[in-house]
Amino acid sequence: MANFDNDQQNYWNVPPNQGAPSPNQDFNFEMPDQFGQELNFQTFDASSQQSNAPLNYTQPIYPVNQAPFFDPMQAYGQPDINQPKSYEGNEFEDEPPLLEELGINPQHILMKTLSVLNPFRTPEKEIFDDTDLAGPLVFCMAFGGFLLLSGKVTFSYIYGIGVLGCIAFYCLLTLMAATNVTLGAVISVLGYCLLPMVILSGINVLITIQGLIGTALSCFCIIWCAISASKLFVTALSMDHQQVLVAYPCALLYGVFALITIF
Image 1: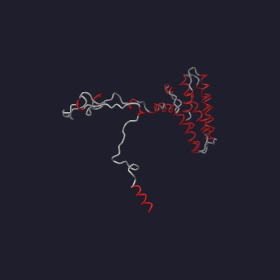
Image 2 (image 1 turned 90 degrees about the horizontal axis):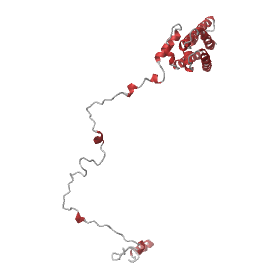
Image 3 (image 1 turned 45 degrees about the vertical axis):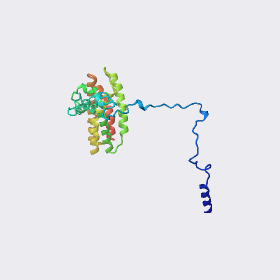
Image 4 (image 1 turned 60 degrees about the vertical axis):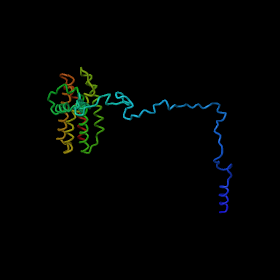
């Protein structure tokens, strides 16, 4: 405590020239010589302004016909709220249906299915221009699904035999037909004509077809598929009097699917 009192006393007893500057001390505000230049300050004459003129706060700074910023209402016109909006066309109404954008025509699918169910019916040639693959894919999945319900996992066999059969038929029809043959049309026809095999596999889920009745039913489905496929190929490719030649390889292909269904 003694030391603290001595330090405090020494602090307050600091001479004027060692502590804070005294009020009577002179200061030198002159610029040093090393700057080498003078500071030039601009002067402003307040007498030249109209000091006696009253200030008018109601007068706008900018002219009336000139706005200080961009006004979209002035540039584009103010919209009329009461006037109903008129459009030249609705973009949603002009768009085609979703199935048409995906390349799926339900009317053609129905006509091809009916042509397969009734092989003696003469189908229209225009429906074969649409190489629809949605129907064949559904029939292949249904065929494999029914076989799965009967305890047979044969999806790989179905797709493998189907791909090889489509390629073989494409090569065969290219040699036989006079018109242009597309692989999509071949896949579409063979896939749609798989419908009798789908019915046979569905019957196999309910009853066994390994007996005499099942063999007869399988032969009937093979002939059904062969007649339907050959009829569609002959109509689509304008192959007159060649249906029997086309029906024989079709029967061989669908016979393999019948063997998968029975065994």
